Image 1 (cartoon, rainbow, N blue to C red):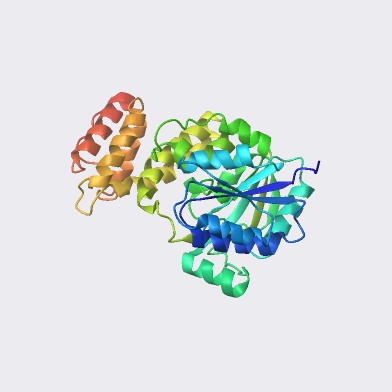
Image 2 (cartoon, helix red, strand yellow):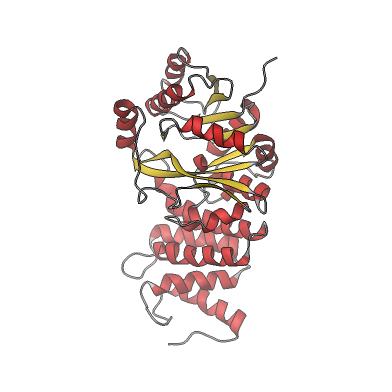
Length: 362
């Protein structure tokens, strides 16, 4: 019986056969000669297009495990199936069917893992390009592309060990609250991933205002890795394509509600208060203004996000008040006065009364 591979590369997909074709082309060119160390798995979430035919074509060039679900499980449950049921490697890595691993980086990543097998977790720096540029790079440039520092999510391009997983949150980056939201940035020891996946609540229909459905990989990493050492691969090994995400219209709700839950989770997992406070401040400044139209009125979508936020935070009036304050600062600089939209002002007034014993006056 052969030894299990070191790394399982899991590619969940749904109705994106041509995107998948290029992702697998990129992989097939890189794992040649590394088959003992790497397995590639495609978990097809009941696609209705020609995904099966694309996979059969690729299987003639590289070993590839293909599994098609009898029904669409939703993206989060498909991630869990790919990593917990289909994969057999010591470590697992989920990549998108619209991502691109830069030429030579699979071998580099394997080398880093082999040199640090006492660690359970590796964080991958990444960069963003349009999906058209991603496709062109794979087809015309053999997946070779040198990103600029400005393109990269994290600005530290060196590779090094971290004393604690949560110290990754303070590395300079483009958006601190989204440090762990890209599924492709996580490589984890698979038994630990399975342990964390058991804590996900994925019953019922997919709810993208739920952290478990929106960012299951973030929750798995947080509950299993907080306080433990990790490795940071600053070399930007992965291109994340922008423009191919069918769920992009959900991003405001995912960001506004899901990231609030993520910060709460960091706190629950024992992340330093200073880190949590910094993330919370950034969250309010970045996302609170998205509630509004330009006329200081709640937008239709903003009203929906606010209701979702209120449902999960009705026992936390200080959080409601902080949201109100930062939302209002976009329109009323220097002081918070009752020219704010009424729902926001009422939340702010209630929070200040609760915590400071004062009311908000003009």
